[in-house]
Image (cartoon, rainbow, N blue to C red; front, side, top):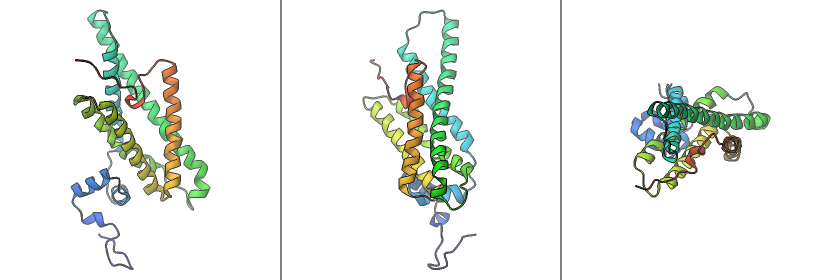
Length: 218
């Protein structure tokens, strides 16, 4: 059933009548109304699987960099075991960094809650929105497969795109202004950067979101 506005007598959500491809294009363009339609007027329930797949993509990219930077002369069995362990380690680190990003966002919004909302915000819906809006991380794999001189720039642009999508997801879900949404994203990014710095000091990681991507000479 299409909801009609009382004053304009037009559909409240114009995307109800649109083709899914049009909705996807508008979501890629980070239009708030497209995000609102996807979050509130669709029954998409793939956020958990999407999150797992994005983490696997990020873990693979870090693992791939790590293998390119390591020269190992150990026996084949030990090499396979070490490589497998390295992938699990990269997956765990990527998961912890993303968790830190979300914790930073939720902490900021919880502190600001009395000022930003008249009613208790739905943090479960916000988590779902953040997971769905992180779909841009899927572009990490093509960026590596089609390796070229501009790959480091592509990876940085992917990071900016994901953060922009997260910004719109927060703004739409909680119906807050752009300033608070931006501050929430920056808070999450700050905590994530702190986690990245800790891992780098412990020499456990090769850098968050491939920030130190090194092109390989052929």
